[in-house]
Image 1 (cartoon, each protein chain N blue to C red):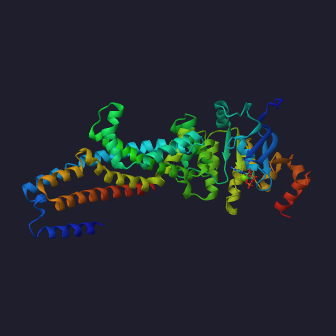
Image 2 (cartoon, protein in one colour):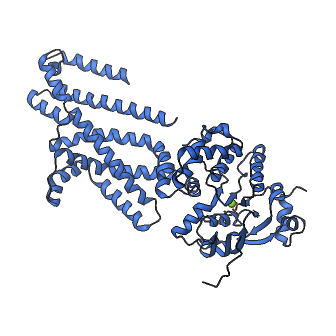
Image 3 (cartoon, chains in turn orange, brown):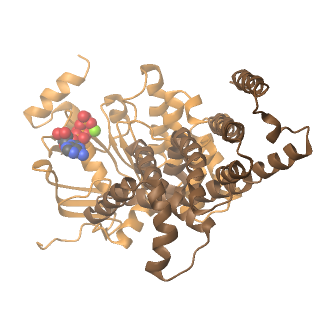
Length: 253
Length: 242
Ligand SMILES: Nc1ncnc2c1ncn2[C@@H]1O[C@H](COP(=O)(O)OP(=O)(O)OP(=O)(O)O)[C@@H](O)[C@H]1O
Ligand SMILES: [Mg+2]
């Protein structure tokens, strides 16, 4: 293993030379990126470019094959300690919500705190209601996920993650499965979360959202980070041609 | 269904009125008939106890055999395949005979008829339960495991709170089927002398020599028992569907 310099202290996540293979196909090609406390990173790029793989490596839903990933200084090597570090610090919101359909909204939110944080049911309920209010659906606590609209389900999913009180939240295209009229209610919640200082990595093509909250824009193509800049540079004068083409395609003219 | 059953009884009763054979052996209005009926129904306890004990054990064993099949470990997978293929290939009657007469000699233990029956039935059924559980668990979306990972649940909590509750809801009809199957298969344990419904009927036939009437009662006993169980399973399904 090569000599790797410790990155600056405030980094929540560091990725150094991370590669990921699916069989012989290389989905991530020696990707490096640091994410510091409070930083909001928006990741975009064409389909199949490795965006999901990148953020799924951060919480090890995909195990990387090469390189080093750390979370709050703990190297992710498959050990108990590294798993604990993921469990303690990383939250994630999925494109398909992935709520537990057999549990009520409230139970969806309290299961994690009760089982993995040893919280009492009363405290967990209180915590859950607090976050349901934050995503503005406290009145749905007793319903089941299938009784909610897509936008509501995604907000429950965000609240479920927040109940674990993570240091960093990963979003994998959280609005792609939603009907257009529901996208904003979810984005609004995400903007608020960003304003509250949460460290966030969002894979999304909602460029309005990116303009509003992003500190750092990342453009990926073919398993590589092609461009990584602040949003002003990104939207005004991206360096690479591939990125320019991509932006032309997705931005309204 | 119930009307069909009544019609069947009626027809059989009518046939019993003719000739030199009849339903007197099981006629509840005569003392003799009542004694015989009571004797026949005396097997009900063991049929139910045997089947229920066996299905509970078989579900637990089935689940334990199914879980290794879901891992990515080759050896665990292999264990599941070998168990299922081997156990599934043995006829239930052969299993009963082997467990009752063979196994005690092999392990140098004594075994009661009841537990021999339970073990044989549970073993035979467990291979099928394992396949049912495997299919049920595999039908659960990968996203459920991923979401469970994001709320820091480990393997056992994920199975217990997320995967199994959903899987069991889906396989409930299949589990109900297995219970019905088990009730029927328990009749085979009569061959080693278990005093369940079939054995009782066989014994009464030997003394009374009225096979048509007695076996008809036996048939009705199973029919009623299984109709009740089926209704119970359907009720449970409806309840779990919320
Ligand atoms: N489990 C897997 N097995 C095999 N190949 C995979 C797997 N997951 C992803 N890939 C491949 O890796 C590449 C990157 O996938 P990834 O899901 O990260 O792309 P993405 O940028 O998120 O695309 P999208 O915008 O469609 O979500 C794709 O070519 C995909 O086919
Ligand atoms: Mg993706």
